[in-house]
Length: 110
Length: 134
Image 1 (cartoon, chains in turn brown, yellow):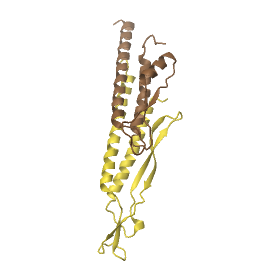
Image 2 (cartoon, helix red, strand yellow):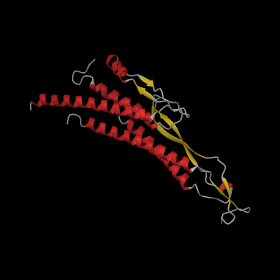
Image 3 (cartoon, one colour):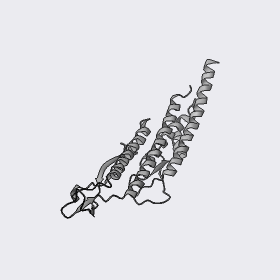
Image 4 (cartoon, chains in turn cyan, yellow):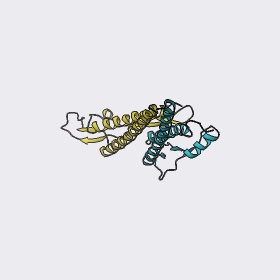
């Protein structure tokens, strides 16, 4: 069900934060042996969140090249994905910000 | 789920990487530290990292579980004039590969930087979220 005031963006924000959690954990464990990198399938997560209210769409990251210690984190990929997630989060924030401003204008009439 | 969990994740990585930098600094500082017997020689330190998982089994950071000392045989150097030399004229130096330690240091530094980057980004986004509509 869609939020009448803020639409999809409130959910996009909380999901975006959850995704950044996962990516931050990947970057934090870039040097941990046998750590398997994960990511959130954002589109899938947002779809299930809006239809069923639950969000579980974690996927394993497939490494470009295997490392000797069993770690599958590629810091460059994780950083790029993190930057992308941060940008999308900011986009949602901008939409929400505009919505709040519009509502405030409507309420105060100024 | 805590809203500020991401700070703990990045913070734990900063702590772990600084332990690694400390170990490297200690190894480099003691690379030329000779001793009079094989038992008294400095042994290289090597931290061991492990994933921290939360109650749901999700990765929630990293920690140093152990700092292992290297079992490598010390180098035996013949220096009869050295004040620490034993009866046969030998002193013992730790077998630390300085190049390896430098590479380790650069790697730790890069990882530290990545995590600082994550920390700053999330801090900015959180500040913007807190001032939403202002």
